[in-house]
Every structure is written in C-alpha cells, then in structure tokens.
Image (cartoon, rainbow, N blue to C red; front, side, top):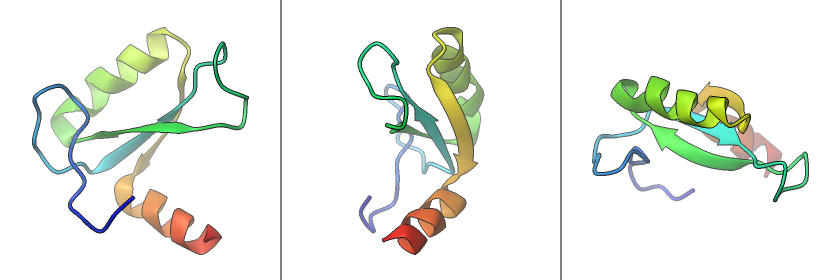
Length: 74
C-alpha cells in the first residue's frame, strides 16, 4: 500500500477507508494468500456480507492495525 489516502473499495465510493477486509477465494488462491478490499464505515458491513456469503472473508481489521502489522513484517 502507498502513503496516499486509502479509498473505500465499494463501487463509486470515494470516502477514506478505515477497514481492511482480508479474503481469499479457495478455488483460486492458496489457503495462506490474502487479497484485500478497503472499506469506509458505511460500506464495511455490506462488503463483509458480500464476501462472507461466498465463504471468502477471513478477517476484518482497522486500517491502522493492518498497516502497522505490514510495516512490522517488512
């Protein structure tokens, strides 16, 4: 991720993201692989449900925590 302000992944939304939704599609990705969508407060639940219904959602973490964990692992 870059230093630019993260933007929500919901279609048409330009609001700053505060959540990271980590997911993977088990038919396509290895179990440890994590793809991410970013979400604002308004779209967190909707995007989580979309991924959850499909069995893809693995974790929902505040953006600051996700970034800190990435920086610690770098």
